[in-house]
Image 1 (cartoon, rainbow over the protein chains, first blue to last red):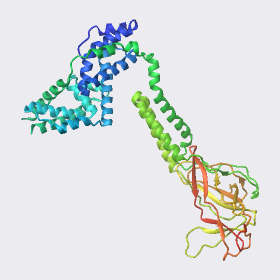
Image 2 (cartoon, each protein chain N blue to C red; image 1 turned 120 degrees about the vertical axis):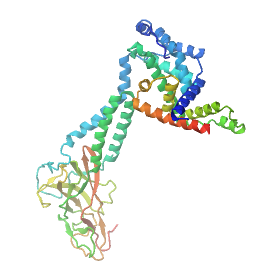
Image 3 (cartoon, chains in turn cyan, orange; image 1 turned 90 degrees about the horizontal axis):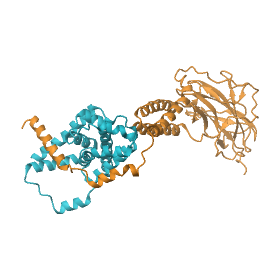
Image 4 (cartoon, one colour; image 1 turned 180 degrees about the horizontal axis):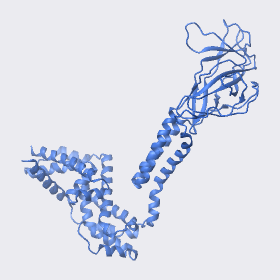
Length: 183
Length: 324
């Protein structure tokens, strides 16, 4: 998703003549990166597929609004990330209790891995799942998509200061989880 | 381990955790679903149409808020200055309590509390929804809602109270003595004969920060039997200063600036069982009158208040009570 696309502008300029084909080619170029980012944010591959599909539908509906073809990457990522964030919020509201998993884990308690690194990653993984939707998105954009703070702010449409403070808060929680796992 | 090393380790582990969650390239099924989108989903119209459709809700919110503001602005001018015009002019006529006239009105169907709260809730919801679509429109609506909210608060802070000139001294009535030790309203006996007119005078003052338009006395739709009890017939206004002595004029709506008051005559007829001018207080039973409520508007929004008069009109029954 982040790789430079030298002929992207020329490709998008041909939109008038062949909009569907152009759209498909642009989206296809970003599909792998989008799917991987959505899966990391959502932690669920099936839901990530739906999120990418929904983002592509929204992008197709608004494709005529895209004035600067060079912005397709950032524009599509913004649609996708907002969709993922909405899904996380809905998930948080539903407060899904995975009863099946709880039962299985209570009958067969998980044995901690002997490897310290694995224990820390398990703890970090659980801590990521408990982050606020916004924080989870920011952590994924920062440490998986390798976006800078200004790029994250632009993607989410919020001030850089807000990104910094929320990232700081999220990192504090993750640091605490790691410290707990180290004990 | 230093804090810096801790942070580096956290970042390293975090990247590793996220990498483990990375599923790799998009599956073929997703690629096919996305490729079919242009064939199965309409493109959503022109950019102009899309922008217009997105702006509909915030524009509606802004329009609603501006409409409320436009309605309120003409009356916001004299707010708090206390320099309103006072009672508006009305044609003077000879006071005739037998004439039935205007000024007796039904209660307002909806009062200010409901209107103000509904307008604010609607405005805030539309502004917030609008903000998510077109931020500047949402902000504009929110500012207007805040102004309207302030005006609404002023409306709710405005009330009508008994004015400084409040007296019973009309025809067909007689002031009674306050019971020793009592500080409550003094009795006023209706001495008019059965079916005969009586009048009582009082004044209404604008006790709030906004001008009000007095629309009349509220006639209770559940009045008791008019054959037995005194009945309101008309409202007259007394424009003479320091008066309640006439001349007067049939009631028409009165604009009152904050702190100003208007003198009024409430005219009624005694019930068919009224004792008339001669009765002995001891051993006589009385029937009172319903609380006096006035209807008015503030910034065009209807309100209603009960006026606490310093006297209590009562109609005496003849000895032996009212024959059924």
